[in-house]
Image 1: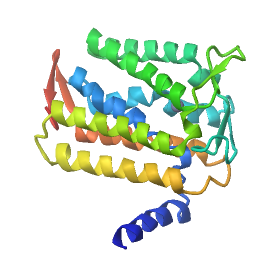
Image 2: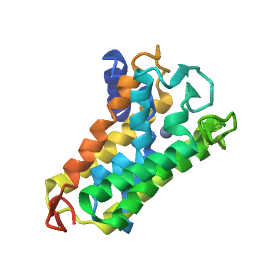
Image 3: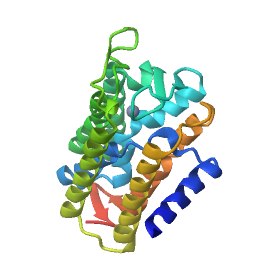
Image 4: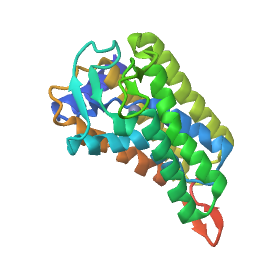
Length: 249
Ligand SMILES: [Zn+2]
């Protein structure tokens, strides 16, 4: 079957060329980002992805510095072979509240748009809320406490796929109904991203676990590609104190 061939081809690309997309491309976070455009069209989709994925972009840096730790542990939950054993600075509730406040504040300093700043801060926090539903109890409330939370949606592969793809495609729907493509970047660029994320997502679900922890951090950093893709699809020019639409309006 044609579909199978192309799917296997992507599996081949990912695993034989050791492009470890195993970092878990959790598409729910991107779904929340897409949906945020319904609330506020001012920030670029790239900035929105940056906020919604902020703690997962910070996490690989802390892994590389040896500050946070992860182990490969097939069966840790049905959905992910990763044991997030120690990530109090990127993934504790208190940590995320601080990162969200800093993110919003930094945006305010640059753009002086307090409503958008608030939305971006909330988007940083939204990542943790989504993680709270999916992770097993491994998310600390505060860095120094042993109290960890997580509702464990990942214990069911099928429910994870339904909920996560549901959030993702609902987000894409909200994005489509609240913006309009004004050039190829805004149309072809968007659809290729949606297809790309969906393929990567299924590769994560059905692909083998990574061979070692080593490349995980580098793969985590590769998520910057998605942030850059967001800026490419939906660039905004900020002149004076007004936003000018370049890719989608
Ligand atoms: Zn996360």
